Image (cartoon, rainbow, N blue to C red):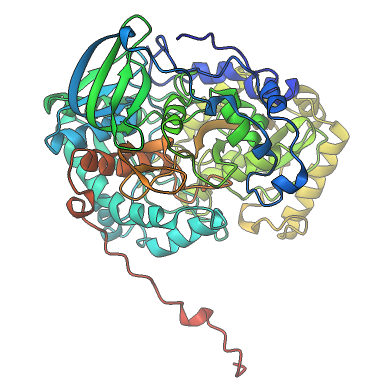
Length: 620
């Protein structure tokens, strides 16, 4: 049953694109926030990987244009993707034992840990299996609407509470409507109560919950102040290439698991899921787990899929996430295990992936130099954008520059100006302001200078006393860079960006040495698309009917995003792990999450009088 995992070099991805995708992998490896999670044997996990996509496509034969005209998948409909073909059943004589549980959770990241605790609290005998040697996770931002912490900060006068109905409209707009809006509303109503539950759950672990103060506060693209994170007294709040100490998932997941163990949850590592079991078109009845020669059958009343995304399967990535091959690096933990095992196994028994393709990906400027909102140029020294946008947009537009290269350019005074603008609520944002800055704490220049030196040491940030020398070090056309900086300084002196419309209050001149050029590195963090689900977290079939006994939560679930990852609520991926993990756990255990999790009272705001325009009678 074991198959050798091979690089899918002929998967329709050029060698250049593949090398771009893998070329900075060392950065991600260095960023492992949770150690000791190498994959164990994966029976059945890589089924179909031995056949490359190009061969699969030719096997399907040529499709005429008429057969594709009304197919939303377009050319993808003509490809026989090997991962969709079920392998042979595992013979009964290879199963060495059986075990009975109420709820089987597959995957022990943040979503699986939350789901297992929720199921156990509902009284279910719960087993959580994980193919790695321990749990896994990275980062730490968690979105939740209207939590007690958010309301506390509102009462203290830090900010006005967000218009949550408006957030849902913005998210739907970002996805151009290609999402299941009831899922967005379910999250809006339930996420605050789930965060309150989590705070109470780990209250005795020594972790402190707080809100992130570094969200973007600009007028055109605004992030919302609803991003939570947890920390302990060992942290220094420094974040570099995915590494942080004493905060985020590195401390939160083990605290959740500890509570699960107290409730009787068994966490069984080095135990891959080889097959989901379903009786024809009836309910899911459990799974076959383990490796060839030592398979066990777990009989379960419900199974929860919490296995994360599929970005380590090149064929699935090519099918669902073709744009991600533009990314410079990958930073998720651990490498090599996100092979979409349970996406495939769910499809093999009748589950369906979300109908909207391509899936969106979370791509931030995380592994390179900090982008801030300084002047950005390509390798020709040309400015190509208004830099006052979110990190996701920067990552995408950078990909279309010559050789996919871009740099942020600034001088000796720029960093102080940016720090002050963050403190004053003018700037900010993911991969710009400091990743774990709290309210009441100013931008820490000592920390930032340490991070700047680390990027210089990594060869991603260059320093020089002249623009000519800077261009030579960074590999930028010198004439182009000098002309662009001169033009930028002219616009800064004028107080108006005639070329790209950047706000004048962040249009700082570049005229005092030393000068800096930081290479921007688009970093693939997650695939934010997956299996079809309803608001109760059932996995759905192609006819959108729920499969009895089969649930999904976290990154494995789909229909929440489309096209591009919206960063207006930093930490939404983890927010989904928490909210839908708890919903899935309660429902899988036979409870009713709709009744058991309180709804946030959301009132839609009226359009401000000042924004109304009478189109019948002119106003003065």
